[in-house]
Length: 375
Figure (tube, helix red, strand yellow):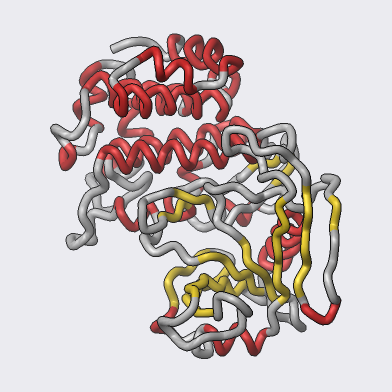
């Protein structure tokens, strides 16, 4: 694990506890880091983060996962010093479990990659800094106000309005763009732990990936921690069988998430009937007939979408969920296909949609989706 990217690193005054990174990659369709950007990764002191989160007060805890708890805190926008609650900028502080080797490695990997300037993307949660003091391992991210996709899919939260069809399309496209960026030749890593709880939403329902467990393409995952917390439902069949990670494993996981977005249901929910608890297994019973579409689509957003448009998104999900990785599209293909859906609904013009997709992806996208069958 880890990467050997080349980046030009430039440090300011060492006493500032800030690492500056400069890189010259050109921005292209939002998938590559901006030109000549300077990013700052602050090394926080543990006491600073204690103050920012009010000593990690339980009322400030906004999430908990297998690797640790997440607390909301506040920093001064200019100095990044601790600020009073409700002032300055809100941050998410992940306090990694001290007794878990995963936490140590996760912080080191994320720090390394971000210092090298490779994960600057509008659809990846921005890492502001970290704390590696003594045995403490903490990560400081930007705070996203709309919480996670999983939160909005939960049928047990009655006061949460169902996501609109337009927001669902936006979330799917944003997540796909983030994965395509990670899979690109410039970055070449696997996200490995894509699930609804790791897709966070800002105030405008723009989606960003967080909490990644990164790996190199083709690596053997001898640390099953990423799937050890009940999220194996998102894991591709070949990963379950061999433990070998490839980029198409992320594509399968994306298919599961896309199915959640279409259905408004969680990938696994014990509150459902026995035969419907596993969303993928239940939905596959109806592949690829019209019956599948009308059984799976979220009834709460009926009338918000054109049937033929939603069917196109459903075909992408079907393709991503193929048991054989060679039959799944690449994430670049998925981005192209979702952009076609987005643009056709925005403009009603297929000609403009075709112009919006990189030409190198158009042919492979159309061929891949044609193989998924028709309704």
